[in-house]
Length: 257
Image 1 (cartoon, rainbow, N blue to C red):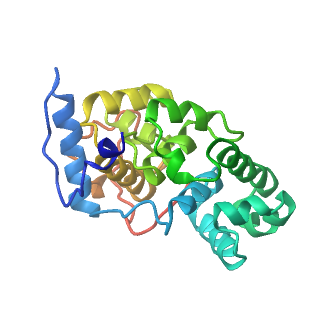
Image 2 (cartoon, rainbow, N blue to C red):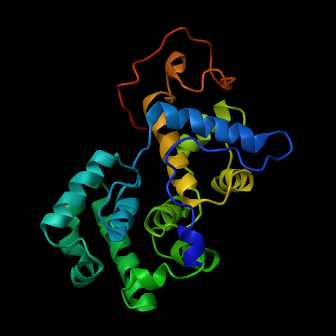
């Protein structure tokens, strides 16, 4: 299992389409990936120094902009709390003031402690032991931890554990419903099943693709007034669900939902 997780190697640039499927879905998805990669370059996501920092960030980023998470991460580092051992010793009340910038800080402190308790009880505090488990066994476990839903669980597994699983989010739904791959109300699991059925089983590809989608949705394919004339996918996108517009917003103005 460990060998499978690490075998992908670096992306290094545009990828080949791989084995095609009926209707050319794999080739289309890889063309989208290549255009986004050429436009944005490597996204270097997840921004963290350790796997544990990825996990903490994945929990704290729920319903808040990343800049707020960065403030909380910096607070935890400064307080010496950004390790499984230190966080296990801290109380919920001790964590709360440090993560206040992320909003809902009381419940998020409980979520952090719930994960730490799970890690301590199940794996004696060892992330290495936890990430040695097969994906199909570990994912249901992580989903069983208080406050961790599919998006957070998959972010932990993909970005901290290097498992071949692709993270979905509202940005994915927005971009790919406009591209016509699925409906605007597609479920998380339906979206994930779609991508993983039509892309090579490759952690590095899933990692980069998710980050590129978020970059596009955050800067260009906005919820309101998308900058379609600036979009690297303009020639591929039927713009389903959008009214015609001749305006293009600046791609240098990042936004969040």
